[in-house]
Length: 226
View 1 (cartoon, rainbow, N blue to C red):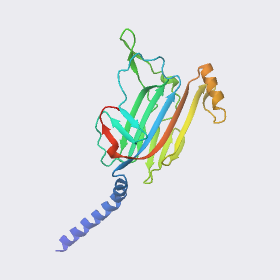
View 2 (cartoon, rainbow, N blue to C red):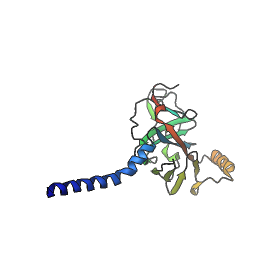
View 3 (spheres, rainbow, N blue to C red):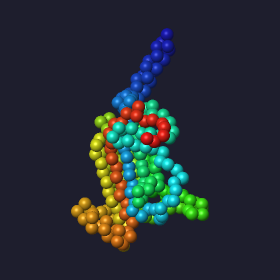
View 4 (cartoon, rainbow, N blue to C red):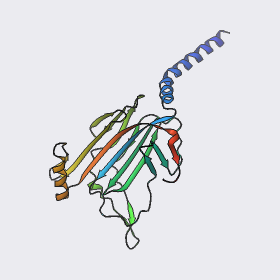
């Protein structure tokens, strides 16, 4: 009888300990049961494409309707337990050459944006050629979403920058590669500095991160774009 009681006590202690560990995750999951926090990350590089594609082999895998707070995907995704969605796109001269969509159940996410991007398109002879000049993508590091809070605030690390964004807030930085190296465009003289980049052909990249707030999981659909 004593051994049985001792065993039950041990089981109760273990269950209590597991409950203490799991309860924060359960509370976090319950707060995002029907919704997820949505972040968009947009990389815009002036000279990242060395030419204009004559045709497009692939179409974007995600259609975003910011007004309706909805996504249309080409493939179904399991959103059970998801609390964070991150969409990354890279464009140059109005042409998207890279895209990623991540869903996270931990509120954390990593994007290796320093890896070389590739955009292969056929030329006039039908031969595939690479259009992306990765040396013209001026970025200072990868992106890591380090924490998602229950109120929708996110903590992000980009290179050596620590960024905190509440729902509805955004952050942006524009980097130029000039004769003296990489520097950030100042808010006061950005027009003059951009004109210099255009005239001198200096590579310039703008990275913008926006916290779009909570979006409904019911508005993540699979289908053709509108």
